[in-house]
Length: 240
Image 1 (cartoon, rainbow, N blue to C red):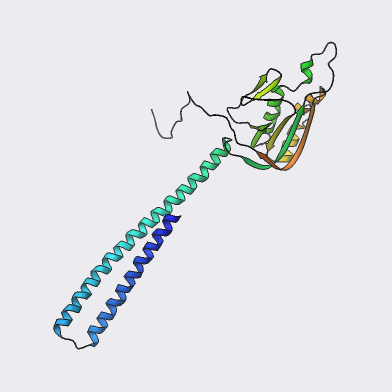
Image 2: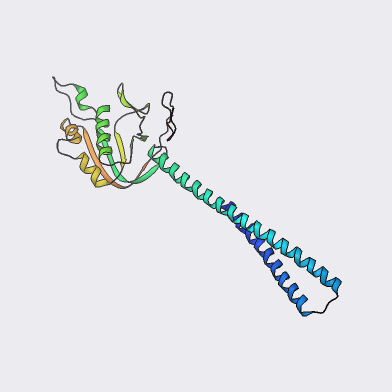
């Protein structure tokens, strides 16, 4: 709003000058009416009065112009502030801004149970699909932001097995897996503890799964690259 304040000071200055001219014009008229002065001096004063009147009219027009310009500047700055607010919201929705709020912390860790002769050791490990199911439950319950071991989950995030570890956003992570989710803690906790839900299934294989409600969780912004080779934005109202 600095530009708007400069305009306001300029308008105020012009108004002061205009007021001085008006006062001078009134006093000149009083002087002419009350004094007996030579005709030559009277003509000079009349000329000064006409010039003052012309200057006053010019200044009045300038004040009106400046007021209109000031109004446009204020409107422009309000529009810029609104656009900035929308940009912040868009960055938050895209996961490009660090956010904080209430939510839950979910910790998953491989089972300590030993596999039997006829059991696969992989049944007792946390897999990429297990993390995906937990994340899906959280988003379905209203989570507004989610991360896995510090990696923000956005629309282009990938979660997949990468040998003995799991890759998230092309970053390899291992157990324990800490999933942070911002949202209403009660709703998120209830969604994860549904009967026969994902946590019950994991616990049945001895996988450690615990949920902690928190009043203060911070989730970092997405740090990976965003590249669009085939997708292009479609502007509203523009037809090809």
